[in-house]
Length: 322
Image (cartoon, rainbow, N blue to C red; front, side, top):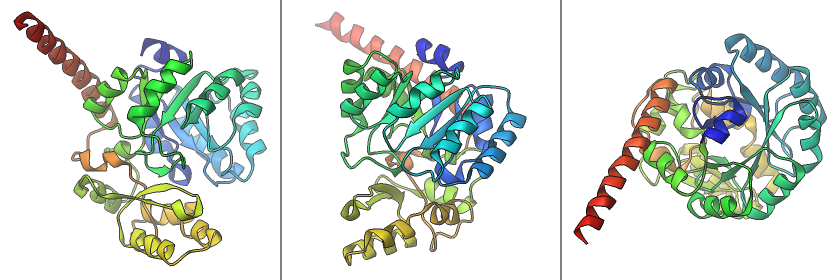
């Protein structure tokens, strides 16, 4: 954990996921102020729109933060890369595409580079290209997922054994128990998205938060397998429409239109759950409170420490008896 925190200049080994077009400086700055790495996501926004988000972020916090650029999603990749340099963004997170051609550009401009991957092969390529950090994302995660569908439990230890740079676990982690488990797998930190939706600083619609709080263990669903666009979302009336459309053989272009970032914004920000979708990871069933980001981070750190202390006592007791 220390290596990760020193690399990113953060107090806690917690990274916020990008969140696409619903990315908010309000939440991202709260994450950074609480000691984690807040993230502004570019999604499908224009350069001008992201520039305003960065200016707002810099007003809200002087602490380190990241800009997430989904390579195959953003309409102006060159413009986003230049924007990161223009505003001296401390960390860039690259996802949804091959990061290799862009890593050295950021490194030459003193920007740390995170690469989000879902396989050992891609992680090794990112490390060889100069990445500073790997986020290994299992398909328990919310939003767009890899069609490989490797779970966090299986992916993280394989990444750790194959790369030398720090590995962060994403997908299926949202409390102290998950954090402790990620550390046991060899991760040096975690990335969270869904859990941060239900925090006091969250700027998202109350219906989104309520849907998370009432969710049980089976409240998320995968859509898009039939068109090669795997995405995990929360069950809603709109999710039912997506599932029915897939069952009827939806055209990939029509599926793309039904799951674009505007439909994401309609659900998450406006709360119109019959007209837009809301992302949700498999940890949704664990979310039962609305703490501040600072309270969440403190509880996760202290809780994980207590878990390890209790386990060590249990192991020692067992060995003494046998």
